[in-house]
Amino acid sequence: MSQSKPAIKHDTLFDKPFTTPLDKAARFSFDEQVVACFPDMIRRSVPGYGQVLAMLPIFARRHCKYRQQSDKGRVSRIYDLGCSLGAASMTLAGEFEPQDLQIKAIDISPAMTNEATTLLKDNYPEHDIEVITADIRDVELEPCDMVILNLTLQFLPAADRVAVLETIYNALSEGGILVLTEKTHAFDEQYDAWLVERYYDFKRANGYTEMEISGKRNALENVLITDTLDEHHARLAQVGFKRHLTWFQFLNFVSIVAFK
Image 1: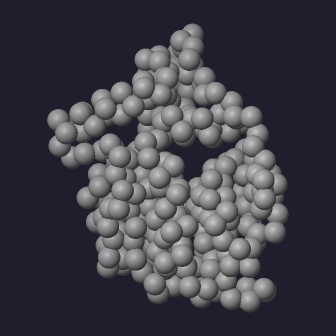
Image 2: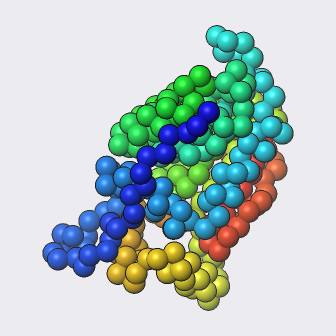
């Protein structure tokens, strides 16, 4: 099936100087402006994002064993939490037959879920994919085989993160997995400073100007709150995961797989 490919708008959200104190204090939000340039933003801002997506079907084939019952029979149920435009869901749908998966993609941003619904229906109309507009902290998850939490936990208040992971752990069937991808910071200040500066080099190499890098950093302040890698692993152990490992790292971005 040929996939529809809407024109990708270049990310120019922060290419102009702030003109008022209110502009400078504006917080980053996943609104229509961000949705319009989101694929370009992710491609140029998140090291290794394509590699993480490419591995999801490989993980799913190994760990999703048709454990869940649906009205169409036994399926593997996968949650894509904080789905944005549905890239993870689309990657999975592209590698599985419609009868094999039931995907539930959830995001709090109506702008994101509206566009994700259109993209997924246009490209995979026969797949069982439900896009839900909701706060993942308020959703009761059905039993499932795999949960994807890509660059999402970092936008939740730190006090709410354990509860979200507990919900995921309780919903996963034995043998199921959580794939957790996050931006992190290092405990050692010198090490962290090196990683941050190399990350800015990565963004410069992808065409971002100093003004854009600074503007995005200011907009995300107190919106995106990172943890250390050790804090992520400690939290996973706290909610019950006995095995969890860092399978991917690119600068200060990491992906962890946790086994139920």
